[in-house]
Structures are given as C-alpha cells and as structure tokens.
Image (cartoon, rainbow, N blue to C red; front, side, top):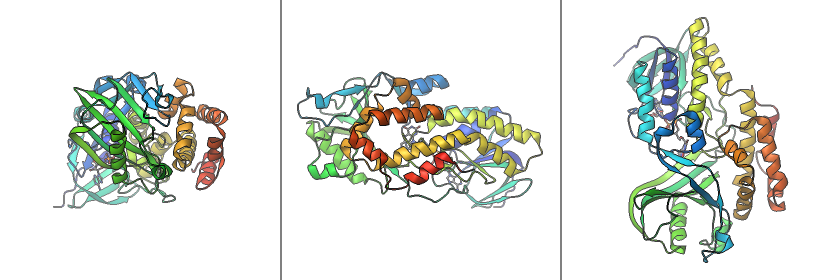
Length: 428
Ligand SMILES: Cc1cc2nc3c(=O)[nH]c(=O)nc-3n(C[C@H](O)[C@H](O)[C@H](O)COP(=O)(O)OP(=O)(O)OC[C@H]3O[C@@H](n4cnc5c(N)ncnc54)[C@H](O)[C@@H]3O)c2cc1C
C-alpha cells in the first residue's frame, strides 16, 4: 500500500513519553503535525514513573500523581539483625516524592494533541531522506510522509538519529514486585529511595556489584519493592537482582504472600551520548540523551524542556525560509546548549566513578551526597543546578568525603579523562 500523505510542518516518530510530550507542546504552537508510531499511542506504558514532589508541583502536574509520600528516606548503613542498631538508621529526605498515574499522564498528552488536531499514523519508519525543502520518511508498508522537520522520538535505540558509538553503555537493571507480604517491608506511608543495607549478603556477594532496594507503601496492604543496580556495563543480571530481593526479605523474616505485578527484566541505559548535533533531524526523549545520568529519570525533563523547544521550532518553521537542517539546528541549540552539555559531561563523569565503587564506598558516597543542602541535592537530581552550582556541589561532596571515596573519585581508570575533556570542551 503506497500512501503519500500531505506535507506537514513536523512529523514526530514515536508515541512514548518523549514523542507525546513534544507533540503536545508543538500542538500548542499551532503547527501542522503528525505522530507516526509503531504501536498504538494508547498502549499502556510498561514502567512506573517517579518524580519529586517539588518538581511536579512547579510544573503544575500534581493532579497527575497517583501516589505521594512525605515520609521519604534512604538506608545508607550496613544494616544489622538488631532493628534498633545504628546500622539500621535512616537518612530522612524531608521532601515529597510521587508516582505518576501513568494512564492519566498519557491521556493528558494525547488529549492535548487531539485538541491541536495532531494526526495519528500507525507504521514502522524504515527510511529517511532529507533535501533542501523536506524530510521524507517511508514506512515498512510503503506510506510516505513529508515534513519540514522530523523528530525521532523512538527511544534508546533510535531509528534515524546518529548517536556516537564511543562507549560501552552503562545499564540500570531492576527486578520489582507489587504485592502483599507477611509483614510490612517498609513502614506505613513510607517511601524508600535507596536501601543499601547489605547484611543479607555473603562475604563473596558483597564483593560483587552493589544493588539497593527502592521500595514504597502503596496503601491497602500493598507494597512495591524493586531491587536495583545503579548502572553498570555489563549490567547486573535480573536473576541476581531477584535472588538478592528474596534474600533481603528472608533476612528480615518477610514472606511474599501474593504478587500482583512483576517488573521482570527492566533495562535502562544511563550514559547515552548526546547525539550528533549537526544532523538534519531532531530527537526528543530517550533517543536524544535526555535521561538524567545520575537518576535515570526522564519525565520531569521532558515536561520542563518541551515548551521552549516547541517555541523555537515554531518560530523557525513560521519564518518559512529555513531548510530542514537549519530548523533542526535551531532545535539542537535549544535542546543541548553548551552549559547543559558541560553539565552532562560532569554527570557522566560521576556515573563512571560510581559504577566502579564498592559497596562501602557507595554507602559513604551517598551519605555525603545527602549531607549537601536539601535544595542542592534535590536540584542535582533534577538537573536544575546551574553549571557553577553543580561544580560547587561536587566540590563540596569531594571535600567532605572520607579518604577511600576521595581516592575513588580521583582514580582515572576508564573514560573519565575523555569526559573531563568533554566538560572543558563540549562537542559542537
Ligand atoms: C525500568 C525503567 C524505569 C524508569 N523509571 C523512570 C522513572 O521513575 N521516572 C522517569 O522520569 N523516567 C523513568 N524511566 C525512563 C523513561 O521515562 C522511559 O524509559 C521512557 O519510556 C522513554 O521514553 P521515550 O518516549 O523516549 O521512548 P519509548 O518509551 O521507548 O518510546 C518509543 C516510541 O517509538 C516507537 N518506535 C520505535 N521505533 C519506531 C519506528 N521505527 N517507527 C515508528 N515508531 C517507532 C515505539 O513504538 C514507541 O512509541 C524509566 C525507564 C526504565 C527502562
């Protein structure tokens, strides 16, 4: 079936959070646009999306949360069988954390697209051609789309975007369950960002890459527990995470009574390079390196960055005398200005370090991290510090760190020198 569609201003490829966020923002700019996706845009998303309370409030999306916790903590000690031991003390984060109602978030963006008369197309994009007037995309079934700008929002392995292949990708892996337990695995109304207690592990297991528990009380006797590896190349295996979650629970005499939902085998690439910023198409979302390298979070960044990018694109398109490549350039400059690229290099430098830390170093590192001011660590995790503020936060952490952590931060075993070079001289 060969269908040639009428030319449009923008074609967004992909209908995940990235594609929908940018399509909704472009729709508000009254552009003529379409979304092409391999799947149904209404198909339920597979992950749970977390966000800090302040971030969601500032964005004005608080009504899209399904859960919100004020009792937010991390366990950064080694842990002990004796529940009142100082090793079981927790660090209180003193700020709210929430989980999106992901159906509401998806519907919110889809409704905004519908209000702006965005056209929906199903198909798998397989071919791209860019000339002076249009970019032309073909699908596996022969449909042809012409647009002044293509936005590739096809996730971590984008179909068309050119991403430098200069590194081994560090992957966060998680094994999670939502269910009922013989006794509460976390306190009532509690959210645990990181439980690094490791007294359930053997001496040999403690030499292996560290993992932590991300856990929360979901209400009605249900809890969500997720054993997580921060990010590693090659990644920690899902079977290891599953076994660790079970031994963690066994150590605390907790039995799993019922599993309602299992997140089995989730992989999140953390240190995705920034795409080639000279290419004639644009990216948004996971494809465009927008995942926060320290947290793996994306949705807050999508909501924050889509409106200004959409404005920039609309201005360029309405001028009517730019080529697709020039429009894409305007977009890339907005999406990845120099300051953000330098910050990204610093974050990735940090991740490179943490990936090699042993368990005790990691616990000490995070103890230092959460002793930054509350505003500082929150803005570090939401990528809202300026470059100078980020450097200052990292320097404070370094100064306060115990010797073993300092040494770990100074050792240059892998790509750190490259990343520092990117910080000093980010690519064009
Ligand atoms: C385990 C895990 C946990 C996460 N937790 C959080 C969290 O708590 N908070 C947070 O903010 N973020 C989180 N993220 C990160 C991020 O929000 C998600 O990964 C998000 O799904 C990425 O969105 P995306 O739109 O860029 O890509 P995707 O969701 O992968 O969407 C890609 C879209 O492109 C389409 N597509 C692909 N190829 C083609 C093609 N050739 N032609 C047409 N269409 C195509 C697909 O059908 C799909 O619609 C998590 C990610 C993972 C993996």
